Image (cartoon, rainbow, N blue to C red; front, side, top):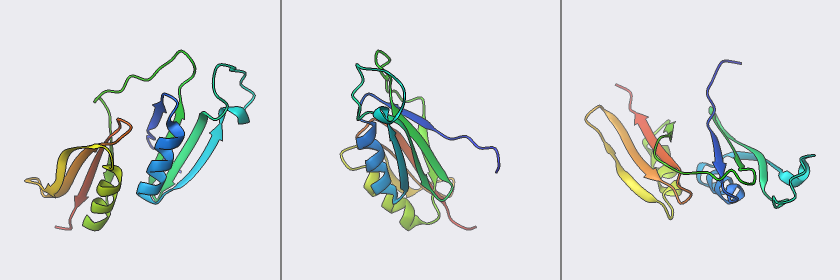
Length: 136
């Protein structure tokens, strides 16, 4: 195993919808543990809320959960998830799937730095960057 950084996303009660959307959009695997499956006694938290989830695809790992009661998430633009794609087709697929009901920040395009690159903000407020560096 090598050292790595894994993004951990928090949601205000809609983690299941978000992570399921990402699973389908990225054709990934998903594991979910619900609050009700844990010994945590948080009666004000719906039992169906997500305690922890792990989405995986090749070298991509994203973890996510719903927040605990009284600790809402404030979404902003300080973090984006960047995917280094293996082809233009993969970049097109992920970009198209994840922009559903979201906002295009930069259309996928060839850039002056030599990459095929685009950015979106998805329907859950998460920013995504898609990059494909063609062989030189």
